[in-house]
Image (cartoon, rainbow, N blue to C red; front, side, top):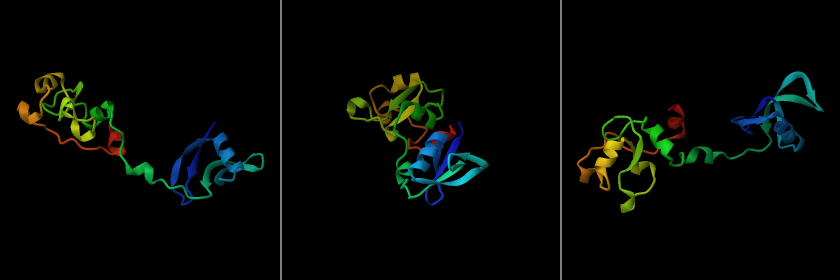
Length: 147
């Protein structure tokens, strides 16, 4: 099966669907054929390459919030490098330790090598006499996709 591009009513791309799904959209009249294969039909419809939605779908939610926190995401954001010494990171370190109320958030975690994570222990970087080489931040979807 070939994939069919779905355009919003304002001609902005939304996603791709299977040919079967696209035909169902045409039958339910939620979409119309925008671009089709020449001289090929599926019933009364031309074989679609691109379909356009009849009514506009709000997509602010797709771009509003960044990705949810995850260990893999922290490693990708930090380039698998320790936030304290720059060596290869194998663990995640909480800047404000979890035992003191630190959460799993983008701004409270950095990738860390095992030695730095052990050295820091259950303390803040200032208490441990360690300096963060990176400033933790919330990444965008695009930034994580590039890694």
